[in-house]
Amino acid sequence: MNNNAHSTVSDVSRAPGEKEIKESEPMVRVTNLVKSFGTVVAVNDISFEVKPGEIFGLLGPNGAGKTTTVKLLLGLLEPDQGEIEVFGLNPEKDEILIKQNIGYVSEEPLIYKSMTPRMLFDFITSLRNLDPHETTEKLRYYLESLEALEYYEKLVATLSRGNKQKMQVIASLIHEPDLLILDEPLTGLDAKSAKVVKEIIELHTERGGSVIFSTHILEVAEEICDRISIIDRGKLVATGTVVELSKMANKIGADLEDIFLKLTHQDESVQKIIKNLRNIMKNNKK
Image 1 (cartoon, rainbow, N blue to C red):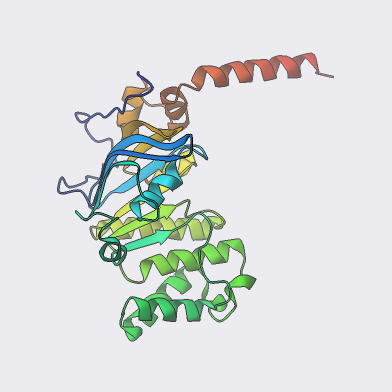
Image 2 (cartoon, one colour):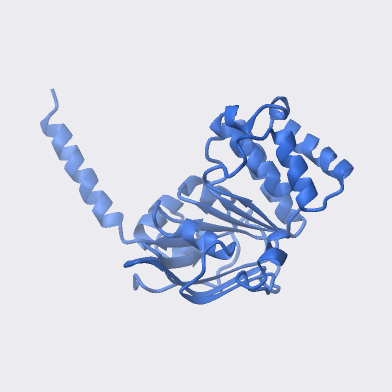
């Protein structure tokens, strides 16, 4: 396959357990998006759509361009070329309207360290003009679900990495947005909390919301994403379900790791590295 080609497959039937996504106007549409920093092209002519009720994965190694893409979607960066539509709106022109209906979790917790979670959530409630009583009930539900109620009155600066992440996840949910944009949201979470967050994400899509899930962790993408775009060195290599991606890679039934390596043309390199390592270890055997 051409390394510069963005491949899709539309005629593959769903695998057992695969969620059916309704065909309707996309919540997000990205067309020929380009963003450079000096001579470095961080995002190189990528296009994709995110449907209502869908968990859409952006998968790639660190430095692939995932976070830059997310920041472009949020209007935090301006594209050099291309078009972005979120709810049919332009992030550069309709930033406030879009952000009213988006929940965002960054890879590093972007929350006020001098506040307590209570102060943070009171601020968000006021800023978003939410009903205080209803919001308090939602907060208790999320805090108890994530076993974080005991940290409600503690300074954010004193919390562990995982507990800061829990507060950031909760902050993204309390206004019930239609779109969640999650950049490595499970980082720092213990296994139980990660499982709860995955269930929250699934419940969000069951009510018609959408999720953009950016990650470099193959197992997570394979487990929760309905469709995945693989990004490598700023270019979008392929988009589809795991079944569709396996067909593109001619690896039917393979796990996402093998599919990813094949589509990013790293499979032969990995095999050579493994062969060399085995030879070295064999020769050094005591």
